[in-house]
Image 1 (cartoon, rainbow, N blue to C red):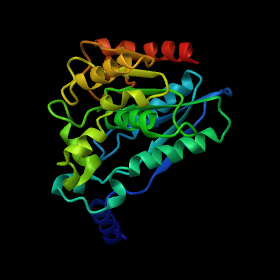
Image 2: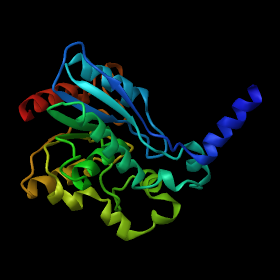
Image 3: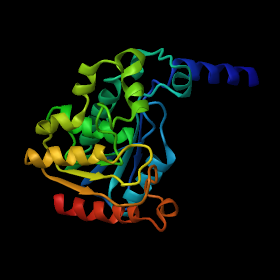
Image 4: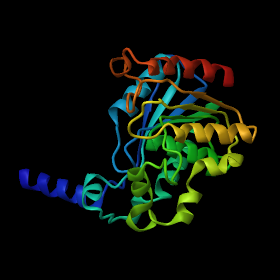
Length: 260
């Protein structure tokens, strides 16, 4: 049994994480608003707890339904070896998974179905607002400390590699096609953006460029730019303690109520 477990673990690392999964979290009372939650992880892995389950619980506590999406990623082995063995974990597999999730949640009869994503998950939900058709596009999006651009100098290179694969990551045409600040004219829903000035992982100009582009195109957008907070704090009071980023959960809830 132990040997079988080791073999399965090895295959998981080599082949990648191709499966997608949608987990439902419901509040005590019925609601007409649901949020599809996309954890971050550079398109290589997923922060399932801190940017998935914990966010869903927080949304439930504030009266909203939540659906945590585990979208396709290639896994630690692919990141470590620079070998991306499965085409099923490259773009557009993640966007397809988000579209499937939005279709599923919309079929449940909610009046509003939005999407919230963290880091690379922020890029994914923003991609949904840009590229998905009206029938499946989210009604609002909240990219939190998001990856936005695929172009230098502000690109998060690990996410670019994770999204595009070893070969396509060097293609400038792909960079432009997936640099979301270049496609603000295609956004049809309200956008809430958050990025901290001291983010050491994804440079804050990612979110600011998206906000500037949306404003220039006359699109509804609200950006929160705390000076302190860093990256990867999710909704954790412990990680946000004493930092300006602690304002964001309440800012988002206020914004959502006004947008409904």
